[in-house]
Every structure is written in C-alpha cells, then in structure tokens.
Amino acid sequence: MDLMVSVFFVSLLILASGGLFKWMEDVFLTGPLIAMVLGIIIGPEVLNIIHFNGEFEAEGTMKIACEFTIAMALMATALRIPDNFFRKHLWSQSVIICLGMIFMCLLSTCVFYVLLDGFSFTQCLLFGAIITPTDPVIAATLITGEKAKKYLPSMVRRTLSFEAGANDGLAYPIVLFSIFLVNNGINDFPTGKFLKNTILYETVLCSIIAYLVGRIAGFLMHKANEKNIMNKKSILPFSLALAFMLLSGLDAISMNGIIGVFVGGLGYARYLNKQEDLQEERVQESMERIFTIPVFFFLGIALPWQEWMDLGWTAVFICIGILLFRRIPALLLLMPIIPKFRKKLNDVLVMGWFGPIGVAALYYALHAKEKTSVEEVWIIPTLMVFASTIVHGITSLPFERLSYKLRKSGEDD
Image 1 (cartoon, one colour):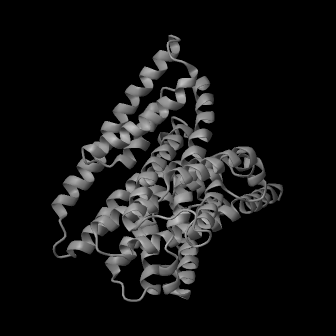
Image 2 (cartoon, one colour; image 1 turned 90 degrees about the vertical axis):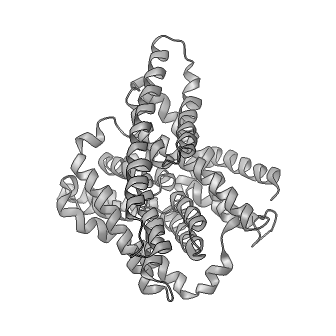
Image 3 (cartoon, rainbow, N blue to C red; image 1 turned 180 degrees about the vertical axis):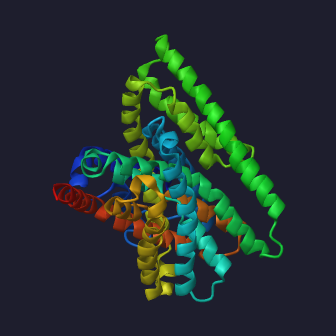
C-alpha cells in the first residue's frame, strides 16, 4: 500500500468533511459512511488506486487504525457523559449494559446458527460476541450534533453514549470466553485462567488502575488550569495523550486497554469544570473527525467482497436478521425492568435501532482471527459492519425525526 497516497485521500476527506459537515447531516449521510464509500471507490474493487499488499498488511493496518480510533472514541464518549450519570441511573444502566449484552450476544448467535450452514454453535457464539458491542464511533455520529439534540431526549442520547463506551470494553470477556470455547471445547474450558486472567486481572484490576490514573490526570490538569500554568489549547493533546497512554500502557502489561480508556476517561472527566467542559465539547468533534475517517476509509479498501459473494443470498439474510433481531428484541424484553424506560416504548425502539456495529467489532474480529483458526471470523463481522454503517448512516436522521414526531403527538394527546 502506498502510504502517501493513502494519507492524501484521508486528508482530502477530512478537509471535505470539515467544509461539508452540515450539508452531510442534512442529506442523511454520516462521516463513516462517506469514508467507507470513498475507500471502496479508491480500493481494488473499483479504481484500484490503493490496495493492501497481502492479508498481513491489511490486518496490521486495520488493527492499528482500530485501536487508535477506539481510544479516541472512548475518551470522547467518557468526556461527553455527565459526572453523576451512572450513579444516578445505576440500575437502568447496569441492566442495559450487562443483561443487554448477554441477550444481544445470544440473539445474534441464534441468527448466525440458523442461517449459516456448517458452523458449530460455539463458532456462531464467537460471531455473536464480536458484534455485540455498540460502536462508540458510529454512535457518536448518530447521537451528537444539533439534529440529535433537537430530536432525541437527553436521556436517550446519554444512555446510548454510556452503553457504547462501557460495552466496548466489557465485550472483551465475552469474546475471550467464546475464543476459549472454540479452541478448547466445553470439557477442556480453562475456567481458572478465564476467571483469574480475563475477569479479575485484565478487566477488574485494569478498570481500577485506569480510573485512578484518569483521576490523577484530571486533578493535575484542573490544578494547572486554576493556576494558569496550562494553555487552554493544551486540552486536546492532553486528552489524546491520556487516551493513548492508557491504551498502550495497559496493553503492555496484558490488560484490557479498551475498557481502561473509557474508565480512565470517566475518572479524568470528574475534574472538569464548566469552562473545561465547553473546551472538551470542541475537542470531541475534532477527535472524532480526525480518527473516524481513516479507519472507515481503510475498511472500504479491505472489504472481502469475494467471500461475501460466495455466501450468496445468505449474506443478505444475515444482515437483515442481525439488524432486526440482535438488539430490538433484547431491549423490549428488558423494558419492564428498566425504570427510566418502563413506559417509553418509543424511546426503547429508538435505542433498539441505534445500536451500530462498527470499529469495536473490527477490533475483536482481528483479535479473534489471531487466536483461532476460523477464517470467517473476519468475513462475517465485516459484513455486519458494512451493513450497519450503510443502514444506520442513512436512517439515523429520518428515524430521529419520526421518533420526535411520535413523541410530540403523544404529548399532545
């Protein structure tokens, strides 16, 4: 792959998105969708201007792009959520994240098991685990901005943001559980290793360390601002540096850097005052645009078109089945035990639909491909990311407007 040519097109796209951002929102297009389409056009299937030199280069580039993009998105998401949001809505958020993830994984697994011939239930469980997390990158394009603030209630937007941030990291134990099942089977499942390493060390202890690091970083930044020894323009690089430090540092000691960035961001955000919050809102838009576009551009280049064609109509049925049955039934089943949404069917349906599959699924697919011999572990998740990016990107604004009209008509009645 010609790096400079790639940088040229990515930079051109970022410049274009900056100038046409408002227009894209009005015509129902999102940044990830535009970037992916450009990658497809520039890639080997159309103009063949850029192509990866083999599977190794494609996977290496995608994994690095995914890691940096997720780190950015999770930090931005953590900074977007009010300080007391989780404590104030502890039960509702816990149900949506924990039980919601389990239901989504199982429902997705059932769809795959019914539609894919020749795959065991444990392999389908791995596919389902990979696409379980709600992607914070695509979600940010759907639930932020003037249109989203106008059409979606703040509780819905914040719930989707918090869920997208939290379940990216919490999907890690589910994916590892599925990988262990595929590699070892039920009888030889390494229970001790899973509990001690994956749960206690890589997730729980990781979260504690990350939160403390985030608190310390937030305290230092806040004090520096109070004493006027920190330039206001330093907030963006400070936030980015913290995200990448957590990601790389936790990864170096074999911990779950994905959940670490989000939890660390929550600790960091606790020390931001109102003026700093305003600065961070501007930071978020810059962070998201700079890092979101490259990963979807590279995805467009790396999409496995031939393998999808080999699936035939099954690929179409999988996309329809997952988009309809992965998330909406899960939240409808949980609706009676979620206090904040118990009698708000419209809001639950909105949250059920706006659960995009994106960069987190790509990251876990690449991780699973390294750990297993299941080749389809890249083909199936990328198919769902492709479908989700298009469908959620196009339907976001129309569905938000429809939800808004239904909510207003209900209030009038």
